Image (cartoon, rainbow, N blue to C red; front, side):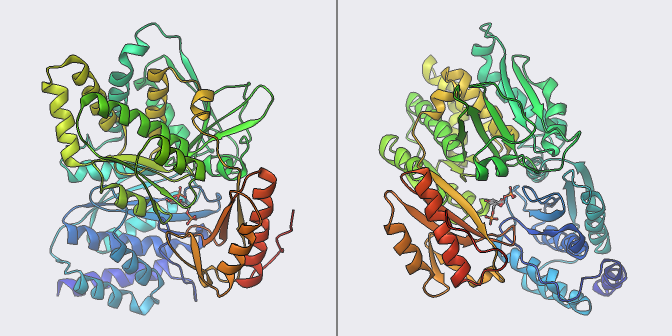
Length: 546
Ligand code: G16
């Protein structure tokens, strides 16, 4: 009877959020993503789904309206599970079924999910919602709210927040504030306190101010950094560029642009050797960079951030003298030099997973301290419950002054890093703290190892799902002949490697190549692109050989 009533509401609202005929979308690497004008029904239905997930887990669920690094015209939605992590894979399948159901089947799909997941209809549901600064986001988040209310769920709309802030808020809600206060101010207070405590001795030693230039991709990051600034020590002086006052989101700027084009974003002014960084559109990624005196651009990507953070943590662990295991998780995009440095010089175990934070996060949970970063700058550090308890206890009780100090620093890192997901603001503060504590310049950090020259390209194909991969996406198993073609091309160059994979956020196939020189990496990448174009149904312009 109750279900009947709900269904009436669903049907009534559903008609207002009709699915365009024939549109099929997948819950991709980080939720649904496509042109904003195709997403109204998806938002409504994800509101419905979030209610079911909330009832099933008896927890608050998050819904973030964003298309992160994608162009301004796109939008998307990410669902956030109870501890602030990405939606569980089995529910990603439900999401895809629900998003693609024809109008008349929506209630049947909902009933099937309730049945398969043993959802108790009587349970209360609470959904928290956030959105990025895209022009389409406000209306789309209203559609999410329609879905939530159609199923009788309660909601709190946090409005404009970064994706990692919403992950944080979900975790706070579900741990009764143990993770932090469930407000945006609570986030600023928690992170800034940890940053101040971690850097106290250095900043209060009368160090002059440290300037950092930040390209905010004309997105939400700028807004939130402006709010946070007055919580941070004056010595850290942040100069914001692409702050959203003009310019299009992610257009010729932002972390994804800088990483893939390996050049400065538009709209930033840099002097030689100045430390700069770029956020992406929803502030869950960060990359650093600088221009040297000769005007050459130097990128410091997620791999180098992971190396900096893990060597800092390893040193502190040595000082506290605890046998806590640290591991690093990367993807196929990790530069070969970074993996070699981590394994051979730092003697840290390194694992490779498929692209997508959910995969890295999962693997990182296997360690006492798991550092995960994608080369594109998306990453964080996870501390196991055991490690966290041990560290907090040592910070309080350890008699040896040096050991206690190291434990206190680790404790500050635990509070500074957003353990729910990669977070540009939190990662930036941790990097800045490490650099100031170690007295490292951006050039010294960059010099830890030298990246192998690499190139990333995109190829348009009719249906990117014809490409199937294995071995953490490092080898293609379909279409027939593609891997053999790549193998033959790779053999032509020294220190080379290449792979292809369908993107889960854009309608393209991604190509990655590494080789002994930039010229060769570029050549290999275009040759592999051409092989993809020929063997996987390329459309549009043929990749031109360089
Ligand atoms: C998302 C994911 C990342 C992934 C990126 C690109 O980032 O969270 O894990 O690396 O997409 O994925 P793909 O190569 O499949 O398109 P974001 O920042 O766009 O949410």
